[in-house]
Image (cartoon, rainbow, N blue to C red):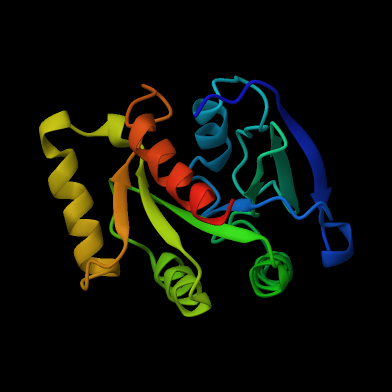
Length: 197
């Protein structure tokens, strides 16, 4: 898919601020430093559409990005940042939970994890929460450029064994740094959008 005019739409902190145009929404979920903003920028071939921060955990709202009026990328606040206070962590958790439970336009959840590391307890909790929503989901093993290309598939399989031993979800590698594996991701997004349009 080629996106010609991606644009930031709104930052929301409550359901009343979500866009009301009923476009499908592709939702990004992941911990604070997993690279969700870079993921968006890489897919749409823009450097600064989604703001990246050198300070993990800085985003405290839900960011909606309009993709040529076809769908939204929705970037949820990152979770699990250790320097965030318990009150802030709870607030972020509430944002995520409210959105996933109340939005009627979610067509796909993209759950990003770091390919290099065993999923954290927070990752496992979020995965289980997503799984219980019964919403379509794919898992992106990000930062694949950080390991040898010959080891990428085995690392992805190891992550799937931990989170999804039934293997009923797709796990895909990705690298924003080297802009590789983007075609497989777009293919999966296209499939979900085509199914509802």
